[in-house]
Amino acid sequence: MTVLVTGGAGFIGSNFIFYMLKAHPDYRIVCYDALTYAGNLSTLSSVLDNPRFRFVKGDICDREAVYKLFEEEKFDYVVHFAAESHVDRSIEDPGIFVKTNVLGTQVLLDAAVKYGVKRFHHVSTDEVYGDLPLDRPDMFFVETLPLKASSPYSASKASSDLLVMAYCRTFGLDATLSRCSNNYGPYQFPEKMIPLMIANATADKPLPVYGEGINVRDWLYVEDHCKAIDLILHNGRPGEVYNIGGHNEMRNIDIVKLILKELGKPESLITFVKDRKGHDMRYAIDPTKIHNEIGWLPETKFADGIKETIRWYLNNRDWWEEIVNGEYKNYYQKMYGNR
Ligand code: NAD
Ligand code: TYD
Image 1: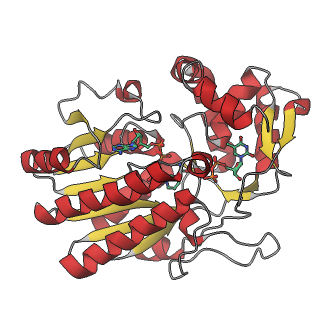
Image 2: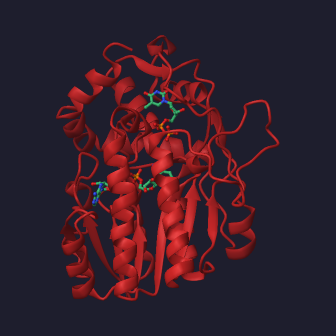
């Protein structure tokens, strides 16, 4: 089997490539990635020489390049991660989110139909459901909820979800779709909450907590997400949506305190800053469907996963220090300078 992984130089895509090369010793993986600010070829350095792996630099919006690759590789499966993925950036510049996440997805769907892939798996997010109230712990995201996105990021992902479903029905494409909660683990770009807090704490810099820090996210270790996608790719029913999450709701402030404790740093580093515009209050996944239909369950407890993640960032300073000392400095100044 030959599998196209789009966005494989990013956080979840790279972890998925490592997972698939190990889990399926007879599969070939082709990574197609534009290497935007969020993509890092050094992340893939351990597999670049693997004869079952090929890296191709390219933009999913470039129809000609995408068709050429599909023609060449005759993919069996497509797993589509490539996206603009950061909510704060989508508030600053929504246009690129529509371009990459909606139009880029459409190019890939056209290619998948034209070249007859066996299955197209679209990696989406629980953020397409909007948010849940803090005072209703009995409410969860289920697959049948209407889409109700809050940010330009989640709106662009919701649009891509609708396109995937439309290509199933109209063109008979065999597609599956997953909506996962917040991931954490190795190789996450330090603009996202957990690695940002780890990086700042190790440098004794302030930890910028939005609003009162009471927003809740449902955290999942990245390898558990990768395993769920692999299972859906092989055993999911065509045209179906699967939520992925492990009932691990945490308030931002509690995660930040935990990171400080693990690193032996004082809570005085916590700085409450101006809230994010339209900030979603609570995400919480009901994973009953994927459990009942496919047998997936998360394996990593948050207490272990967060320790492992902190250890990874401490042991791999070169990877993220190179990022935070580069163009990211301007981003940080722009987003946090006057907050
Ligand atoms: P990321 O930002 O770390 O990586 C995105 C990758 O896509 C980068 O390597 C980037 O270079 C590439 N890319 C961006 N635009 C491209 C383009 N036009 N053409 C080709 N490649 C392009 O993102 P991530 O956190 O790994 O998320 C991957 C996917 O998973 C996204 O679709 C995201 O919506 C979804 N998701 C993420 C989370 C999370 O917690 N991070 C949770 C649920 C779903
Ligand atoms: P983030 O990692 O950006 O993921 P998402 O917005 O997709 O859930 O943010 C996670 C939570 O952390 C979210 O409620 C916003 C909050 N947050 C902060 O408080 N400070 C920060 O500097 C960042 C980046 C996020």
